[in-house]
Image (cartoon, rainbow, N blue to C red; front, side, top):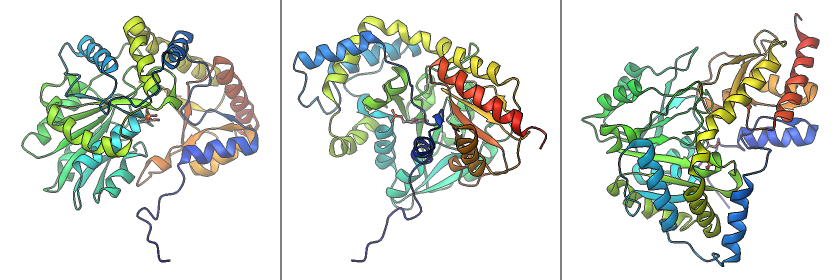
Amino acid sequence: MLFRSKLPDVGTTIFTVMSKRALDEGALNIGQGFPDYPIDPDLAELVTEALAQGRNQYAPMEGVVELRDQIARKLEASHASRFDPAEEITITCGGTEALFDAIQAVIGPGDEAIVFDPAYDAYEPAVRLAGGRCIRVALQPPDFSYDWASVGAALSGRTRLVIINSPHNPSCTAIRAADLDALAALVRDRPVTILSDEVYEHVLFDGRSHASVLAHRELRERSFAVYSFGKALHATGWRIGYCVAPPALTRELRKIHQFNTFSIAAPFQHAIARYLAAHADRLRDLPRFFEAKRDLLAARLERSAFRPLRAAGTYFQLVDYGALSREGDLAFADRLIREAKVATIPLSPFYARPPAMTLLRLCTAKRDETLEEAAARLCAFSERHAGR
Ligand SMILES: Cc1ncc(COP(=O)(O)O)c(C=O)c1O
């Protein structure tokens, strides 16, 4: 049978590839972004309770009411404005489904989406499946800043979507309010929607606060904002996220959502709703928790030639291996798996057009012992190779 792939050039993601290599080689995996420590026992108890209470049938398509109410409260506390849980909040299968649904809702054949380079890898395939095309605009080295003049030049009559992400994976930077103003000015008179991936909203360091499209008077009217309880509650396997958007955009998103996943695991939604009602304050500990891990890793790498680029947010940390090798990042990351027994994520797969660079992404959502062991192995590797 003749079969034509719709995504002929798309292979297995770099995360799966590196995690499999880590298993094969018996390496410590600090590449893929998932915690290796348990969730809050209070949250685990609430899941057991929801199961025991028989919350096991289809949840409402939009999401469990109590959960959407709690999200509305959380948004009001963060942004001092009201969001209607009935018409503006939808529970999705992780942030990933929200991203996919929003893209399908906006992009049609021939449409263009502006995506920054580097970017999280889920955006481009979803745009292409919808018949659209990504126009990549490079974040500027060395600090991955936005060049809004380039974005202006990339906008065309076909542009329907601009996808932003802050805190940003993989660069670990955070967008500033002035960037959002610049974006708003560029799209003001255009039929362009914003998709704002804010799954790391709680993980910002050194006293920074999160610049959300939901807090931006103009952008809020034209944005889908995407969040993930997997990230906020250290439970990536639960696959619970949500999308916040004005009613007209939410209606379109739900048309996709109802025929995609329809509704999301009911007991987890009930458990999260009760957890937020009782312990919403615990989310405020996240910056301190991850900042301590960032600082631990940086301190332990100090006597190595790996140079951390101080992360502004996310639970990742970039390190520069340029003092050790000029090898490409894919080859170097594979060498680290074999020789240091540490799995990391190379940066070039996040790019459409990777520049010459020597950066790896490490995940700091790991137990302190895991980070200490990984750093010790990287220091030993560095000692063996420095000056060669
Ligand atoms: C930037 C970014 N967006 C979205 C996601 C997907 O979130 P979820 O696991 O909730 O689907 C991730 C996961 O790593 C991410 O890093």
